[in-house]
Amino acid sequence: MNVNHHVLVPLGLVVLTGFLVPWLLVRARWAQQAPRLALGVWAACGAAFAAATALLPAQLVLSSASSHRLADMMFTFRPPTAEQLLGLDGRERFAFALSLAVLSMPTAAFVRRLVRARRVRVRHAGVLRLVGRYDPVLRATVLDDERPAVYCLPGRSRRVVVSSGAVDALTPAQLAAALAHERAHIAGRHHLLVAAAEAFAAVFSRLPLARHGEGSVPLLLEMAADDRALRRCTRDALATALYALASGRAPRSAFAAGGPSAALRMRRILTPHSAGHPVLRGLMTIAAAGLAMAPLIVACCSFPG
Image (cartoon, rainbow, N blue to C red):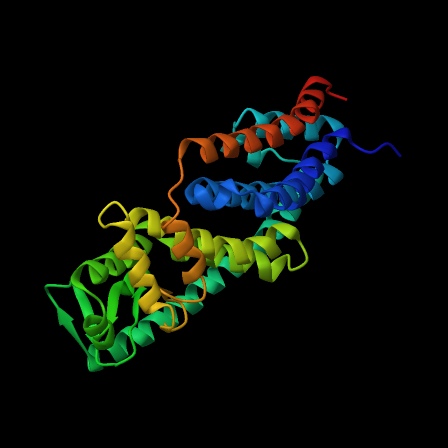
């Protein structure tokens, strides 16, 4: 029995996005210098891997002619029309059902994490309404606690929370820098990427994409928030604020300005770098990975049998 050669494309994408690119990305020095680009690569790898794993069983089941039509639609970005979906034969419907079943696993895990995190944030927001007070000058909720802490609750219950200990310990410039960092998390909807990374880690626990992504994505999100905060504050103000808040704690499903990554981020903030070179190296890495797939794509789109 001859194996359908169109299986090679999703199989190549699985190897590329699930193993090779994450292995390169977790070792790339440019990733921490250009965190938004690195986050884009992680997100693209996750989306491509999910699509490839959904297409793989379909290509195994479909006939050669049907799988060629599927490959053409995939690489020319032409989604099937309603008429085409209604005209599917029995084998094609089975392949479509297989793809949906595979895709439903990471999707369901992602939704579960969003719902669970939202439930925790709503519960914590209810407590804050009882024990905290809103400060219109800071545009944040102040919580009476001598331990210095600044964190945010993203999503629908979004708010920035600052402890009275942080208000007392930080200078106005440091406090403004910490608040800008937290607002960057809210504006960037960073909780969605965290949920996606956790969902992948739950479904594909042994996969390098999931294993490395679960650790790398939260750190890169903190660095991206640092970069956005630096548009409104000085490096010294943000770095010293991180130092003061390094031991601070935040509830689950919240982003904290300090935390265990504070020391690494302080060194990064206080060591200026050129944005052009790491971005260029990152784009070259992405281009090289894309070129690795080019021969498979050309072959599968060129030969109908």
